[in-house]
Length: 266
View 1 (cartoon, rainbow, N blue to C red):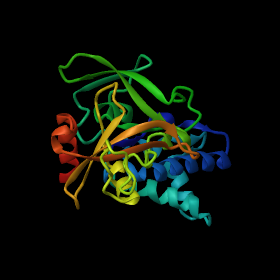
View 2: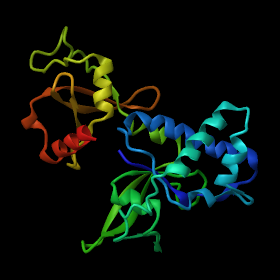
View 3: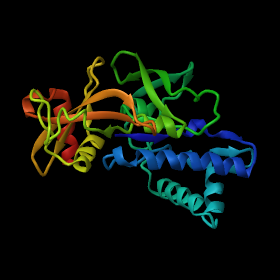
View 4: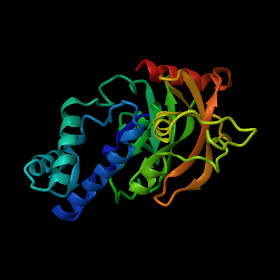
């Protein structure tokens, strides 16, 4: 799954250094939360990210250089993560992925931004809090890829830890329906441990069917496909819960199957 830090959301909104630390700590919390569902994809951003403002007189790069020397481990951690990102990228604007794209948000041309990259990659945006234009959890852009028709697309935009948790599914046995020991007689028993099932669920692919709340995964050790159904509930920490069971390959939607095979190769 692709995640991109939104450089457009850094507009110097921190009133002081303390507030800047708070805002960056929130970014770290989101990055840590979504790490289990990244599937090896690096977090991307824009090549101008380092010069964006955290406060009136403090850029991201300056904050990192100051914070690397901090005695606070949390601050050092986010500084090191961002330092690696700024040195190695990948930068969405230098890869050529969005060269032929047109993207507009609130009537502004954002075609060379991480927002355009998130749209192109069907990824998720991570924005700094307190930007008035990036408060919403879902934002709509007008997007055109090459000679394709313009279309409206909705981008998931994370600014709070609770929003990050909503996209990190948790495996939960559904009333012994698929339990190996006491499963429902018409239900297929889950043949993985809870820990193994959670790992498959973390890297699963959601169905593109708008009415579907299913996602599909593959377990290399058992050479088996699995389907996970949403329970339409959240646990006490705010994570959505899913139950699942093994299925034959021919029950996996073709477009989902292609994405799973691509994930396996990478």
